[in-house]
Image (tube, rainbow, N blue to C red; front, side, top):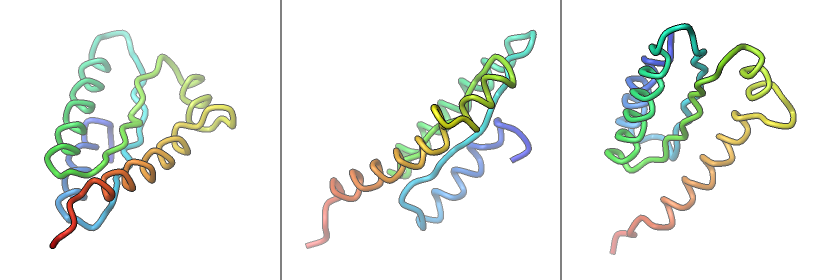
Length: 106
């Protein structure tokens, strides 16, 4: 998406297709001089949670609110911390849990 604010719309459209076991929402919001980044981060987080609950699909939220590009590189490109890898692992685990808890047709 062109920005973090648009991520929930795309995630909702993907969830509505009912073709996926989990969805990863990945992005970076860099804190600026105003509170705008905080507003965007809160809105995205709330929307992703609502989509997950409405569609009963794990939506792994790794839309990160960070202070600067250095933090972004450390969390997105680093070998010690890599939020993308962690998100993928969480998606697999969550999808399996949802599958196991979903009632089977009789």
